[in-house]
Image (cartoon, rainbow, N blue to C red; front, side, top):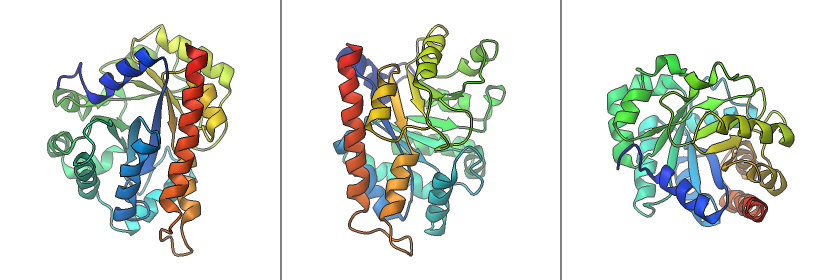
Length: 281
């Protein structure tokens, strides 16, 4: 598998032929425990997720809102580590060879793990791409270039404040897709302005041929459909993590509702994304 042919690039090529956007679902690995998290991960594709974005728990997640912060702390309290996150990816790959998996998080746990070892182990486990939000393009030597050399897509965030002067630098060495953050602020903080999203996607497409996926603020089928009518992918995180959180008991343990509540929401989101395909066609 080369940098030009990954599960991510093949997925977007297929969806382009189908005339629809991708649904990218974010959950935190190990939330609320290893077994539940793995079961949820395995259930997401059947519910309609096209890509799984798997959060790597970290004690200081500066870009995340309170819902995802709490999920990370639950996972850490339950004993989740980066080694266990990679083990979950390996276990997932035993039954699913096709769904792209992206690890999203911060550089510190990767640095502690060891960059060379992490890149090797992530690739061997079946990871397809990385989103590391606190590594700017000026630091590409740290992780981006080693990841690319191993055949992993390196995906960066573009925001409403990323102007045309800065954008070429952000796009440098990026592959897989561009992750456009539709609001200024942390995850789950606000609802995006869909007219601004449309113009932002159009601006990005003037600078790159990569697919544009839009996240932050997507909560339901309607908002997913609005984004999908303009973008190549819709990223949903806080809403899913909150659905899981709301299903837990008072001691943050899973209940019989936990997997079902999340997958039901994913099904609704997928319907919204797929309905927008008729608008795009």
